[in-house]
Each structure stands twice: as structure tokens, then as C-alpha cells.
Length: 528
Ligand code: NAP
Image 1 (tube, rainbow, N blue to C red):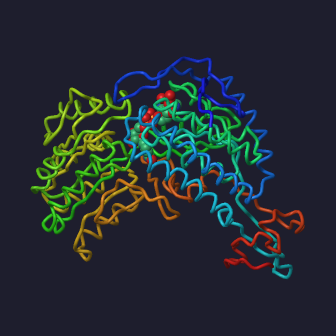
Image 2: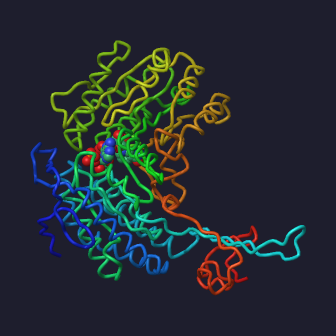
Image 3: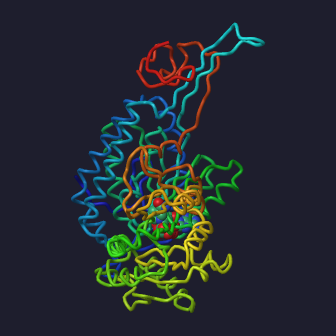
């Protein structure tokens, strides 16, 4: 495989170099530049969208089997390039080889999971309500409906998962599986890595006979390229993983278009961990050990990292500080994220209500020690400003313990939290009234609630909910992990009184595809 690229972006199957401002691919471990990349411009966006609109017409003629086969080929092509892209990603992200090996499997695995889903067919939620000519006072028409593709989708990957939330990560796989072309805004933190995924896509499109406009990779740094992409009238939805600031900016742009479109943004989260009194008494030490690993994992650069720990006053914070101080420092993804962590720690250090138990400002921001801070619940809850300030995510290995004087105070903290991707409960007494009260408080504020575990690590499966109420994500019901993610990138048609032969195969009486359908309110695969 020839991977000697000299250009960084891809439009309609051609490698191109943008004509906008340049930026550097950066090695955070060596703190030095690797390569210079040119940003794409508005003319590149127009070119990519023109090709995508044409490609959509061809994709609409592809069967589920065609799309499933294309996705399997794409997964094969990614796996075939892994020996090339893993070293490049290690240099661009500072992530270790084992983690990137695992992430490669997750990335190809989730593409294959979408292939299986598409081949199986139920994602289209075909439903049929048969006619009843004798119904009074008016006859009932025959109405059938199914999900269809939406149109070109813009995808913004995150810095911390260069593969699984990258150029061909979960958002891209979900959008492609639903039959949509994708325009990927490459993350400026790993532009060389992204090129390998464009290369894999090029091979898969060629081998599958799919139109080249199905995919574009537009590299760029600075917010202009992404903003203009979301403004383009042919973009019909956006998948975004990244910061609250970035996600919110794109949501506002999308809402202000002449034709507003959905931005499925997965953003920051502090992932509170609540430790109930009996669990604290029974197993403080084990919980502290587990939390230390979870906070330090991936140098804290996970959207599910536990950033807030809520418990009664106890020895747990000191134990946790000890275990955290024993963790080896990792490498931050890029200097921008490293600086953001240091300035967040500086803000906390300037607040006399916050006590640092370990860590703090570092002379080596790119390899910082883990930080543990503590605050009294009364100070956390002092007023709306305090709650907002202490609920802000610090992206990196840092966490804040909220020490409560009573269970009522612990519940009060839960009641004052905004939306989160996850909440974790450590509890041993499942019959306790405070536990029931806590669950009632957390359900509307959280996407995923874990028992007696740690929030880092997200299983990729149909039942996963990786999303949560704002500000964790823009739509609480939407998930960016697992095959349910496809539901974000579909439209839906209803077909009333259509001749059978004109209906899509999914809705024809004979059910030629043998898919599961909701027929007169009962699931069935049988023909009508
Ligand atoms: P980021 O800085 O928001 O960047 C994400 C992408 O959006 C980049 O391509 C960036 O490119 C673009 N962008 C950012 N702000 C923009 C704006 N105002 N207008 C237009 N485009 C904009 O995020 P990141 O560096 O990848 O990741 C760090 C953050 O992501 C953390 O806060 C973390 O919690 C969150 N995260 C969340 C999840 C999740 O599932 N919820 C997963 C991983 C990470 P440009 O800078 O070139 O514009």
C-alpha cells in the first residue's frame, strides 16, 4: 500500500492541499512539530458538497446488502493500514501503542457492527398499518413508514480518540450506514493520522464501486472551516465530539441557518461519583484505588473521567490522593489541552475554598501529575455561580471531592448538577431510602448510571447510551456510541395508499428482505 502522501485533504477521491492558513502537526511527547499542513477553504467545502450531493443520488440506489458489504470492506481496509498509522498516531497524540491497538479494533469493530445492523434491516423501523375500508365514520387508509437517509453529514472528530471518534469513527460509521455521504472536518491535533483513514476510505470506495463523493476529509485549524461547513445549505446534520465551547458554537450556527439542522454534539462531562455511607464504611480503600486508576487513565483525557466525587467527610480523599500520587504521569494530547488544564488548576488554586490534596500547577504541563482537590459541600452549594464554577470539567487527570456533612447534603449536590454523560453510585444497601432518592435525582440528569464501578471505558453495544442532558450533549436521547447512533442521521417517509410494486422493498407485502416490521402494532417478519 502506497502511503507516501504529499497532500493532506481528500475531496471526491482526489488528494488536495488547502489554500488557507497553515498549522503544524505536533508531537506532544517530544514537544516539536512534525509537519506543516494547509487548511481547506470555502471553495473546498463547495467542491466537497457538490460531489456529496451527486453521490447521495447514487447511494440512494444502493441496497442494504451493498452498504453492509461496503462497510465490511472499509473495516478491512482500516485494519490493513494499522501498522502504518499506529506509529504516526502515537507521535501525534502521545497515546501509547497498546491503547491505539485497542482503539483500532474498536474502530473497525464498530464499523462492522453497523454493517451487521444494516444487513439485518430493523434499523429502518419499517412499520405498516393496513387499510380498513369498513372503518366508521371514515375508512382507514393504508399507511407505511420507514427511515431513510438524510443527506450529507458533517463530522467533527475529537482529539482524544484519533480513531474511534476520528475521521472514520462512530459518527462517520453511523452516518454512512444510514446511506449518507460524509464531510469530515479533520481534527487539527492529528492531521497525519487522519490521512490514513482517508486512504482506507478511498480503497473501500474503489473496491465497492461506490461514488467518490461519498467522503471528503477537509483538514483545517481555526474555527472558520468548521463554521463554514456547518453553514453550507447542503449539510443536513452534524456529528460532533469535543468541547462544550466548540459544540455550542456549532449548535448556534446550525440553529441560525435559513434551514436549521440538528447538531448531535457530545461534549464535556464531570461524571459525578456518589459514595453512599455504608459503601464508604465498608470499602473506602478499594474505592479509592479504583478511582485513582479511573482518574489517571489516558491522562484523564476521557469524556467519562470522574471529575467530581461526592461523599461524607472521611479518610477517602486522603487515600485517593495517596493512590493518585503513585500513578505515573501520562502525556497530554496537545499543548492547547495541556495549557487549558493548567489554567483551570490555577483558577482553583486561587480559590481559598479549594484544598489541593495532591498535584497542582506543574512545571511540565504536557506530562502533569494527577491533581486531587477537595471542597466542603456547603461551599460547593453556596450559590449558582459556585455550583457552575465547580461543575466545570477540567480535561486531564484532575478531580474534585465534595465533602458532605450529611446524606441530605450529598443529595443536595446531586440535585444541583447539570447534565452529565455518566453518574456512578457506590452503594451496598440497595434498600436504603437515600439511594432511592439519589436514583430519582440522577435519572433526569444523566445518560448512563453505573453501580459499584468506574465510568471510564464505554462498551460499544446496542444498549449503550453515550449522551446526556445538556451540556453533556445537545440531545439527551441521542447516543454517539453503539449502533443506536444511526438514529441520529435518518429522515423518515410515510407512504399512504401506495401500489405495492412502487413501495420500497422494506415495505412491500411480501417482505422480500425478510426484515422485522411493526405490522398493525405487532412485530413480525411474515409476509402480508
Ligand atoms: P474541540 O477543541 O472542541 O475540537 C473539536 C473539533 O471542533 C475540532 O475539529 C475543532 O477544530 C472544532 N472546533 C472547536 N471549536 C470550534 C468552533 N468554535 N467553531 C468551529 N469549529 C470548532 O475538542 P477536542 O480538543 O477534540 O477535545 C477536548 C474536549 O472534548 C474535552 O472537553 C472533552 O471532554 C471533550 N470530549 C467529549 C467526548 C464525548 O463523547 N462527549 C469525547 C471526547 C472528548 P478547530 O479548533 O480547528 O476549529
